[in-house]
Image (cartoon, rainbow over all chains, first blue to last red; front, side, top):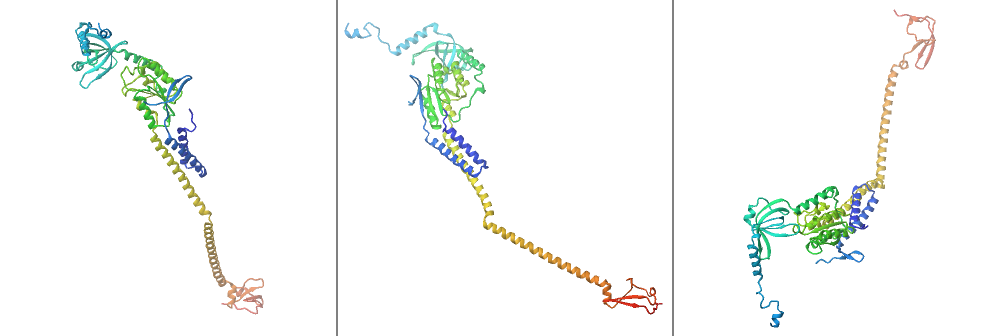
Length: 74
Length: 412
């Protein structure tokens, strides 16, 4: 279930970048690079929140064990 | 007999059909007139105690295999020496009656008294103690819920309001997570096994599970007091939230779960971060990084400006001019002081020379005086120290005269 581009990971990475920037002892070229990386992560998180559409499934018995089917709520 | 009569279940000779009211009245009269059903003593356990606004109390008396509805009218209820609660073993007296409106036999209570702990309550306590001894309720076992669940498992009935509410709240709060329903029975004798199976089937596919059921009677919720279900919850590899019934309902599942939610809706809120709060957090992160980079730039700009000013030709020229003028000034000062010093020196020398001049015998000679010396250079200052015919020298301003003393006269 590890998703390399999960919201959690992207947010944690962004928080790290902001912390590094806020320390203020980073050389300018490094700070600019960190800022750019942070910007990419920010856009990624923002996009994930904006486009998230919940997937709802139901476990059903199948011939080879269980499978997930889209759930239609009554 | 005609064909109609033959085919009809109600033959001409049969007694006339009863109305439902007639039938229930007949039953009621039979029950009421039976002395065995009047002033009966019944031993049982109370459940589903409900009080109406008009002061009538309804409840159920039960044992392992059967149950009967009971009604306690206001005067009797007010005379009770204890609070009637679910799960109390009681000894009741009353009259059996038939409630015609629902066709149900009921016991109209005259007196009721507690008789130790009820069977259901006793079973509950026994399970609770067993699991407590096994360490299943310990706080150290409780796991934290994931902050950002990716997949949320729901173990509940696929029918009814609960699953609908859960999905609606989760969609609004945190649409990033997928929701997987593992359908289960949530009441009845099959429910414990069904819940256990549903939990085990979903537990490896999600990172948190909500076990939920809406409100119901003590009997309805009974399956959540099952020891097997409790052990399945304890053995679940991911955190479990129990959300059974209303806030006031407590089940064994609540004790063993990692988190107990008062209601299914509360469970949905507990398990999911709020996307609105996340947006605020994200925005603050964006603003913080912008502020930080702006600060960093501004600081460097300042440093560059300071260094640049020192490096620029204009700056250099200033510095040279500045240094030059300082040199000039310094030189001028040196010269001044040197001149002043020299002048002072010569003045002092002149004065000294004048003074020397004044005391110098040479100066005296210049004024017309002479010095008489012997040939060996000794100055003669007394006449009596000289003999006639002595050779002497007379020193004048520009040389010496060698003379012989012809005679001498000594002052008296």
